[in-house]
Image 1 (tube, rainbow, N blue to C red):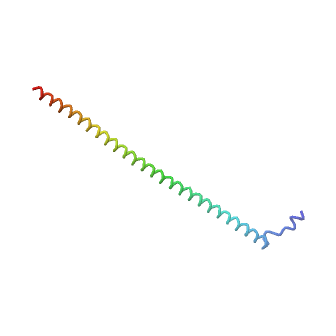
Image 2: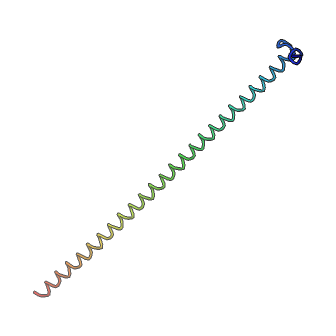
Image 3: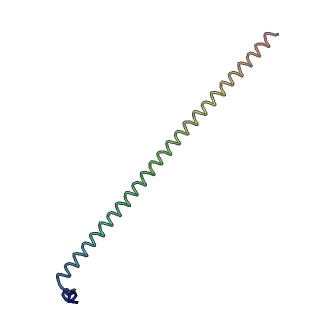
Length: 103
């Protein structure tokens, strides 16, 4: 009981100064926590943006590869068709030449 009686009243300037100091420390702590949270959110946003840009670049590269493969495939098919046509024309010409020789 004596412990509580020795305690200064709440309107004592020293008690108010300590309470104000504790409140300032709490506000500063809360401000630092908000700054850390803001920095964390900004870092996450930046990481997400970089990931999105990387994915877009990968997709663009993949589309370019697929387009190049398609063009190469079409070129090969065209060359094969021309080669077949040349062989067919050569057989036709040989058959015509053979028919002329028989006459």
